[in-house]
Image 1: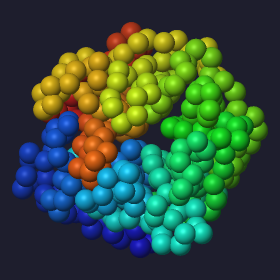
Image 2 (image 1 turned 180 degrees about the vertical axis):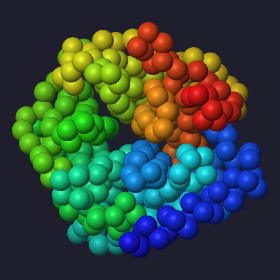
Image 3 (image 1 turned 180 degrees about the horizontal axis):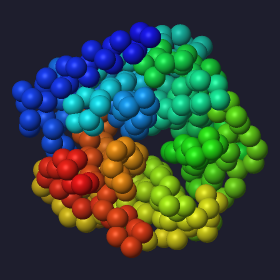
Length: 341
């Protein structure tokens, strides 16, 4: 009830703001994106959940003035919108803490959160990459937190090692089938194979063994996935640390493959930094968003990472062009949702 009242309030305000400032209705990739209060959107490496006609954008909160090496991560920040252009700051829904004995001690590495709603349990489940303080990146955990509301608070539950590997996994995507089954797709450590495993009914732990996704290149990172007309579309990147590289795109009729590699789906040049498709406009994929209320409407989300000051990292949102059942992504300096009409 609490979050319902808050959402009714901000939806009413967004309608007023839309009349007062039409320019906010356009999406400008690679430029500073402010929320409804004029503050930079602080949700990095994240994704979007659509629930009860509202979009919730979850990403890693970055502390201003701190670098990645100085532990800028600060938990999960949430924004909400009913039009994908004007975003309302709903605050942090998960915090790191000052307890050195806790998995979420504020000197851990916390990255790429994704939130999924479990209709069977009524829980919103948050997943995130977790490297424990002082342990480097040799072993990568998946952290799990749970809430009864999309606005949190999310309570940390536990961590698990993905990929059936004692070293766990790295970048990941969570994919929910129409019947509610949830899958964890990730790059396995230490061999960098791309694998998939089914989660249990509660979405809290892997159910069984992970299988290698046949056809996906090794060292494939930053996966984002959607399913359209029975075909899975996977957008990802290569592995080059914080430096951008060319995007990778695959399709398959099965999560385990065989996956068909289609090369780089991007074209054009980011007019802000001069970087082209060979560097994914300076960004890295984080999520593919389905636009509700439109047919075959998807948005590819990327982050331009700035490890020296990740609070200033930028967002790239671009519409997906679908031709011959394949995805293509063209750079646009600005656009609006009318492109899907």
